[in-house]
Each structure stands twice: as structure tokens, then as C-alpha cells.
Image 1 (tube, rainbow, N blue to C red):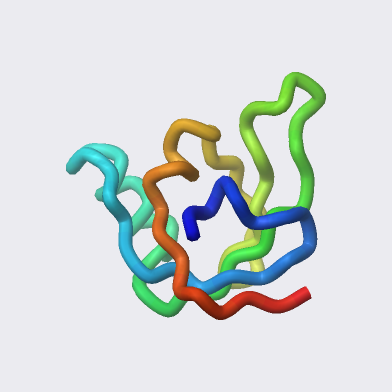
Image 2: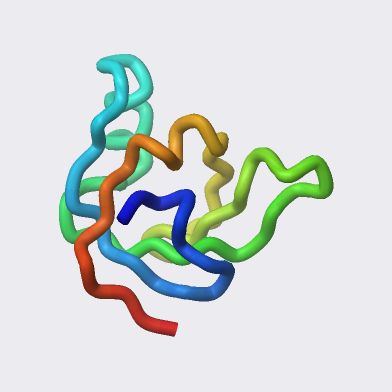
Length: 77
């Protein structure tokens, strides 16, 4: 499952970042490492980007990047 498949207010855990080096570095700097809990909260009116809660902060990630973030099989509402 990838991050773009997670429904609003459903929690997932990051397994792997499959992005290019530049994007991967930015996401790692924001705290998106293996095992990090992530929850989609809001989708912008245009549908892109989506706001996620990560480590007590809210960050926006573009849909094209969420497709490259693999989640563990476990998730919860």
C-alpha cells in the first residue's frame, strides 16, 4: 500500500521512501523515516496536495510524491 491509498483520518506507518534523492532527502528531513506514524487530514480544494499529520506537525505532500511512499500493511482508523 502506498500513502496516496490511505483514506482521510486513517493511520499508516512508513515502510520505505521510493523517491528520487532530492525528494527523499526533503522527506527524511521532515521526519518521514521507517516506522513513522502518518495520518492524512485534509485534501486541498484542487485535490493536490494533501495535508498529513507527522510527529505532531502538519505537512503538505504532493500526490505524485505520496505514490512513492510505501506503508506497512497495518493501518488503523
